[in-house]
Structures are given as structure tokens and as C-alpha cells.
Length: 293
Image 1 (cartoon, rainbow, N blue to C red):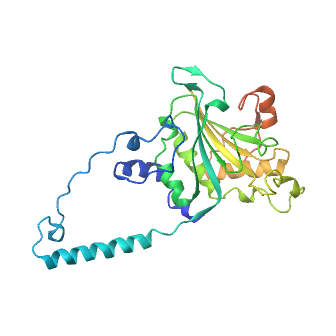
Image 2 (cartoon, rainbow, N blue to C red):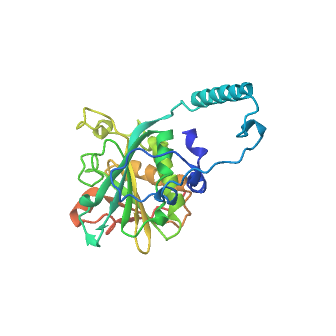
Image 3 (spheres, helix red, strand yellow):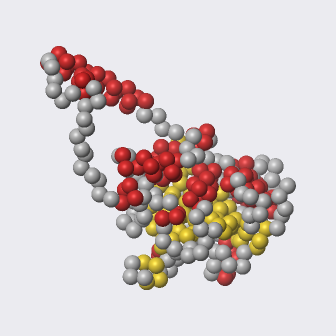
């Protein structure tokens, strides 16, 4: 979608403009969710602004001038309202989740117990309203995860009905480079850049429809995660079915393209069934050794 290309530097532009922003994200589920520095501090008391011209002077020369000014302000407000009323819907509704392995007091908690829902969004506008209030991965403490999944995923875990037969591509990143890659991956997913990874020519098309939710057809991409660890950051992209090698390869190639990965980047793949067997998302994953074309 063209809406995202204009925001390719949004994370850094948003952070620089955040102190003057008055937009707030949809309701959050937990006070433990890390907010960006602009929203973590208390809202400052608005300061009076010096008049930029005689038109905005605090002293009004005549009643007529005052009435004219108020009329002009109403016209401007009405025009602004009309200009900002358009909403650009996304193809799917997406949900952000947040997880910390250690609760306050340094107590280790179970994976699912540590997952907290942040908020959902279904339009370009609601996404940016939420995104600009989230801290980037570089600002998170180790053993913290961000998770983004479409609304068909009830819980972002291996055992969810839409995740059971799927798997995930894994990229391990050195510290300091995750912010940009994470944003690019999120934009690519909600911007439908992976939609063509499963084409109509692929066989067994009926196997991919979700019959557990009224026959709704969900996208092949279930979601993505970023796991902040002490010595590395791990990005993973989850897909619905790990049994189709052609689809997995298309997803891999699309990841390389949208993230502009260098040829030396090592990518790994692991099925969710294997993760359930060894109780690990990233251990014992299969390293992809396919040379770049």
C-alpha cells in the first residue's frame, strides 16, 4: 500500500516530533507496556505563546475585528475537520502484544502468563497513532518481546489453532540494528507485501482456509515478533503452514527484499510443532543455505 512508503522514516521522525504530539493510542491493557519517552513523562502545562502577528494579538482593537477573527477560526476548524475525516482501512485487523519473561521483582513467569495485549488497529491512521507511542526495540530491557498478529490469532502462541501447523522464519541481529528492520517488517506485513507468497496456482488451496472460525480465510502470514535479548535481537515471521516449501521460499525471498538484507544474512526456519516438542522458539532451527539468486 502506498500509504506506507511515505512513512519510511516514521520511527525517527515521530520520536523527534513526539513532545508536541497530542494524539493518544487506543486503550492499553497493561501499565507495564513501555511507552516512548515522549509519553512516559507527565503532560506539561501548556505555555502561552507569543503572538506571531497583529492578527493573533491578545489585545483586540475593535469588536468587529474580534468577530472577524472568530469567524475565521471557525472556518479553519471546519476545513481541518473535513480534511482529516478520511480513514484508510487495512485489509486485516492487527493486534500488538507485549511480553516480559521476568515480572517486577525479577520473578520468572511462564511464557503465556507474561503476554499482555497492547491494542488493536485496523486503519493506517490508528496504526500510526499507536506506533508513535511505543518504545523502539533498542529501548526495551532484555528478555522482552513485541508481538504483532492478525485478529484471527486468539493468543500469539504455538498452540493457537491458526499457528499449530505453521512455522517461522528467524533472523538473528546484532545489537543496534533492530529498530529499522522491525519497523520495515511491520509495515511490510500490514501493507500486504506478503500477500502474493501464496498464489492461486499452488495446490491444495482448500487446506489453507480456516474452518474453525466460520470459514474465514486468513492471510498466510500470521504475524511477527521481535525478541530483545542480552547479546542479540531476534526477529521472526510466522506463517500458517510450514508444509509447503514453495510458499516458505517465497516468504523468505520477500523478507530479504523488504528488509534489504545483505547476501551474508543467515536465515533459519523452525516449525511450531518442533517448537512445541523442544519447548523453544529458536533452538535447533534449520539454517537456510539457499544461495541468493
